[in-house]
Image 1 (tube, protein in one colour):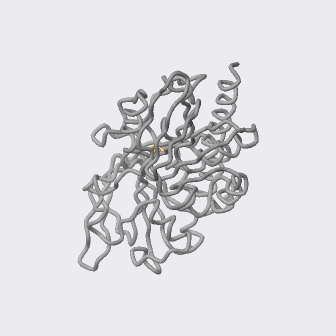
Image 2 (tube, rainbow, N blue to C red; image 1 turned 180 degrees about the vertical axis):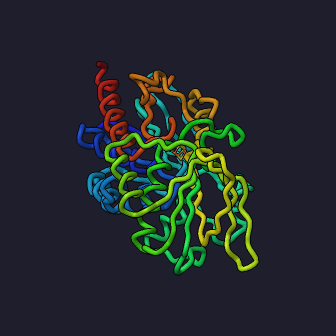
Image 3 (tube, helix red, strand yellow; image 1 turned 45 degrees about the vertical axis):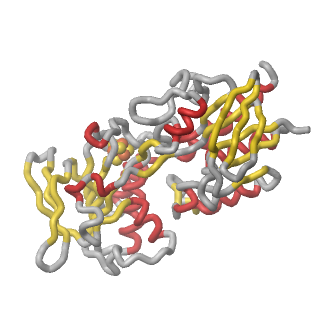
Length: 337
Ligand code: SF4
């Protein structure tokens, strides 16, 4: 009989890890709270740097786990250690005995309404990166104007922000802003598009090429400065005040759409999971790895491993890579190596 491994979280990390565990000869049991797999990626339209459809990746991962046991709309209600085994109880009444658990519970998008100065939830045409991506994905929204003359993107919303409780960089939102700015210019070539940034952090493969194209081919304007205030003009446009910190001059721009690049926050459900399984948590609420250099997928508890954004902000390629290495580390652990 194949040995059980409980995988908590059915985003791309959990799906990829389950796929690898099946290939290694185990019986992965995938537990997901939502009614679908794929997590945030399943809601996305296209992925940088190749602009590949996000749905293709989720479908490929699905095809690799058709033999796995999958519980949707299910939560873990308790985790208890009994000698070398864990007993995992689920909200559907199922209990599973296993020697290894993989946590891939992902992240939560920062709630942009908490940054009141940006007017999310107050002004109709202030949206988040996720709202815009959902519209790119074909979901109608009356919050996206049909012919915007000018569009702004605000970087670092809820990231690198001690007041918001998240001092870390979310890693993906600079390149997501560049990607979405290009996509808006492709749809609305006449629109003026601005990115308001503190620093540009574009470290991944082909990211810099995207940035150069955004400026040279699409004429997107990058303004180094923090947006201090968003208001509405009498004719219903957005008025954005910022300071251009390179020229030292204050700036006022009228926009038809403002997109807030909400960052990655810890998944609040992790706190309860950590309490049940006696796992360490970092000050920012993400799970703490045993070693941030050579053991990012290893927890402080024997047989419990991590993959993806449950330990901090990750790109999709990093998440998939971690899922594969976590599956391999579980295999080694179960083989006693
Ligand atoms: S990736 Fe860019 S936008 Fe996102 S938190 Fe880091 S610096 Fe800010």
